[in-house]
Image (tube, rainbow, N blue to C red):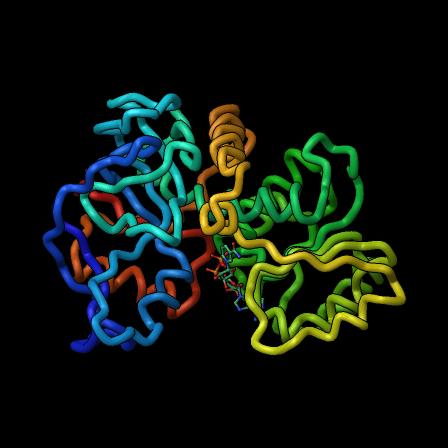
Length: 341
Ligand SMILES: NC(=O)c1ccc[n+]([C@@H]2O[C@H](COP(=O)([O-])OP(=O)(O)OC[C@H]3O[C@@H](n4cnc5c(N)ncnc54)[C@H](OP(=O)(O)O)[C@@H]3O)[C@@H](O)[C@H]2O)c1
């Protein structure tokens, strides 16, 4: 099968080269489904992996951690899907990625695709949705049934993939007051369109802007950008007994004592934790994606695809990486296997 992977050297983008590969057709393990990839989306993780130094003796690695496609074949113990089903999923960082014609994934982390979306719009959702869902409802312990209705959530980095889903879930399910940060007029408009009640600029002082809206503290903070930089600001903005969740690894030890007098909590969210450690509750990701598909089909949340590139070629994948690295895009960049209509 055809795939695009990273190889050392010959870099046309900085980092390692994205190069066409011819690989063996993958064979499903008992809980695997074999998927014909119809669309993928690009995540900051792809850029970090492409830029990471490669070890000596490195084998070509296929990147890509979001997929919408069609089930072609099933392992002997697969129960949730059958050939012909349309599925969407983020996959596992421990396995080969989705920038390929065919892809293997454990059925327990896969959802049936929303019937109201095409492959390209569905492919934008899985990784961001899993991260946003786990962060809000598992880490921050916000009720997905509205029991914390009226409390305030600050989303730092509201217009990226995770923020774009988190804003929608926090409004539609949790019924929170949502404050999102975005720095450009287009990304600010995008956050409002997704349902954010208040949008402030992360290039200016967050505290001053919140006070202008009558908010000196907030109940929850979801940090989707530079955790080191925002930690002290978050510690000052969080309410006593409030809860902060961060998704971006810090470069330095975090000054946790700043949260002590408020008895505030801090959690990490890693949407690959379940697959990385094969936790017994891996199937929760199937359940989350099923809930997401239902919300989409009910018209309660929408896709976050804002740029669709047609054709999985080296040139197009490099272009998608370059767009993401340059910034300036709200929502998600998708590569569809289909030519434009
Ligand atoms: N732990 C996990 O499971 C997990 C999962 C997914 C993503 N992540 C990480 O979470 C981060 C966000 O990823 P993503 O895919 O949602 O979005 P992304 O594409 O990285 O987010 C881009 C957005 O971030 C905003 N931004 C840029 N610099 C910022 C800053 N200094 N402060 C606040 N916002 C800033 C920009 O908004 P403006 O253009 O308006 O400035 C931009 O629209 C990435 O670092 C990613 O690697 C972690």
